[in-house]
Length: 297
Image (cartoon, rainbow, N blue to C red):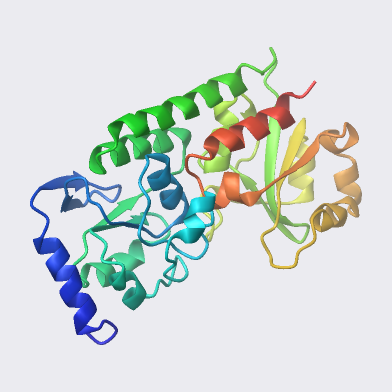
C-alpha cells in the first residue's frame, strides 16, 4: 500500500461493503467482473467512456485530464492522464466501479484492482460498439430510458447522413500525420468505420502500423495510385500547431498536387476529438460532418 493512503483504502472498502446488490458483467477483454447494481459513483478513465457515461444521464466522479466534453465534464474531478492516472486521487473519489479502455488502458487493470475497485474494460472501434456501450451503460448504471434515447439519436444521425449519399460510392482517404510520416485510416479503425457507415468506399489498405491499430503507413506514391475522390485530414493535436500548417506542408509536394481530390478542391480537415481520440456518442457529430464533406454538392 505504498502509493495509497490507509484512509483512501478504508473508504474504498467501506464503499464496496455498502453495496447491497451486485451483478456480474462481461467486459470486452472477456473478464467476468462483479459490480454494484446501478452504481452511484462511476469513474471513467478515457474520454469516450466519460462521454458515454454522460450520454446515459450519469455524472462520473472522476475523469482523465484529457476528457473535456461535454462541458459538464470540466466540473468533474480529474485524476491525471489517461495512461498514468493518479491512483491516490482516484481512490479519494470513492468510485463504485472504474471503466477503462480495453485497447489503450488494459495495463492499468492490475494496479486498479489492487485498490479493491471493480474494473471494467470496454472498447469502441465502430458505430456498433458505441451502440453496445450505450446499451450496457443503460443497463449497468440503471438508466435504460436515457440510454435508449441516446442510441436512437445516434442511429437517426447515421441514417440521415447516409441518406445524403449519391448513386456512386465515392473513394475516400482519411489521413493523419505529416508529409514526412502519414497514415491512412483503414476500415478497421473507428474513423474508417464511420466512412463505411456512410456508404463511401475507404481506399486505405495495408498492414497496421505497430503503434496505431487500424492505421497503415502511406507514401505519396501509394496515395496517388489510389487517387481518392475525397481526402479528409485529421487535424494535428500538437500543442501550438497552427491550423492549416500541415496542409501547407502537404501542398509543397508535387505529387500532392496531382491528386484528384486536390485538383477538385475536395480536401477537408476535421477535429481529432470526434473521429480519433474519443470514439463515443459524438459519432453523431462526426458522421454528420463527414457526410457534409463527402456528399456536398
